[in-house]
Length: 420
Image (cartoon, rainbow, N blue to C red; front, side):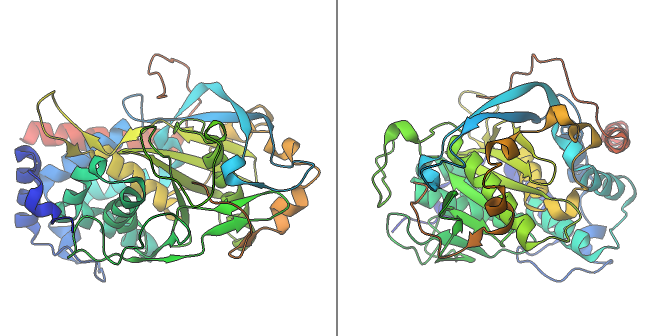
């Protein structure tokens, strides 16, 4: 039995003091709870921590943070004339646009909400937004929950996925419930791999989606029926799914990963089919490899596919320093898993014809299947088993709201500096 993470991890002193200070100031318990306007989680949130959040959120509004790049399909087997293709054999060749988009441009609503809270203490009147804001603030000061992330690299692929969802993605979502692919190889766990004392808020079940006539198969994890998660196996892993796989067909990189792109596209069409009254049809999909994340978003209404930079969950300040949880990864994860609450949809600049992914052209003969006949559960098929260069100087025109968020966050950062 793996010993408790809290017994074997040595937490970076600065990291520990930061979170202990936050916890001592606000006296916030680690469990989620019903939130009210006067909850101490909002009113007593540490000022020093607010500044740290403002700095990282400001980075998402410019070139210091992760960015999006738009992908266009050259060809694929999404509508193969010989029949449906399981995700593990999905093929797609994509080309990235030269123009990048600031990560925050997709989440202007969420950034404005955060800047209002950090600058003026304004709590959202909208209950879902107040809930997801409370989840973020609660998580930021919950260093005990985050501690398990410090050992991500020590877990196998199947274990890593559970730890990441149980201790990061699920904690930031509007619901902690998730479903793990019951067909993945390995022992079915009753507790979180980090410790026999840590419960999982998820269960094993059927995560298959798609249609047997087109792309289809199982996702690794589905969070709250809202977000799909796929684990990319590390090159040195010996793990295999119960299904034989041709190594040539399996993408081993997070960037432009063929299987994840296929899953993201199908998941987005399925979500649109199930939620036709949504305010927008941006449905993020998360890829994980080791301790790195990447976010894909496909908008099936406007046929736009976006891929984020790769984002490390852990960061280190030096060669000999111990890793710390990356605050940027926390914020990016929070925005992604709550996209329906924190985004107003694609910026207008991405809705033009020259920005489309041209996936609809790839599947024009079977578009009715993707738009109307996708299924969730009981779908036959197989199991689904670099970095953006900051030298690019060309960026998409950003929505005007992003400038407002950036200005407010800048004021929070530098006002705190002057006061300190």
